[in-house]
Length: 195
Image (cartoon, rainbow, N blue to C red):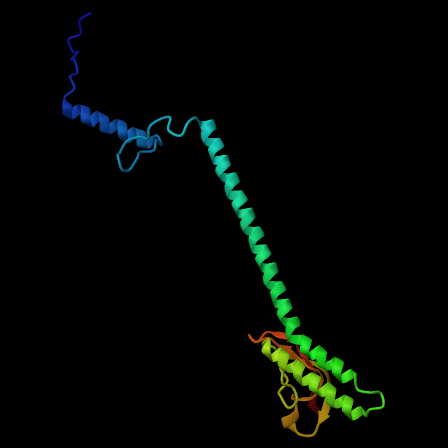
């Protein structure tokens, strides 16, 4: 059957290029990855079968998990070692205080209470000095304005002047803070109050 309207299609070089561009655009629209450097699709079959790629990824994931587990174990050991060294440093700083306390207790029983008191005061000064070397300081109390961040009010006591109202009049338990200012133990105090 003759069709007078049928015309054969002859593609020219320009048309072939347009046809190729259309194919490339369609491939990009269909979600096929295009290599940015070469502008072509990656070769099929690189990296093996899907099962081989999954197995490789699983091995890499297992290796990463093992590395992370080892990292966590190492950090834990380092923290424990640092804590142990700190504890040993504190104990080493306090051992001479204990030695002097032992010496103070060696006072003969027939000695005076004054000798014992002098020895204990020496030990107290040495202990406070050891704490200062570790960065621990005593929180000031008597005559200071009551500060709830540093002081714990154990009670009140009557005072005569309004200037003494809200000030610390007695210390019941000494307070301490670390060198960065963090309170280790608040000072327990009696606060003045006007009637």
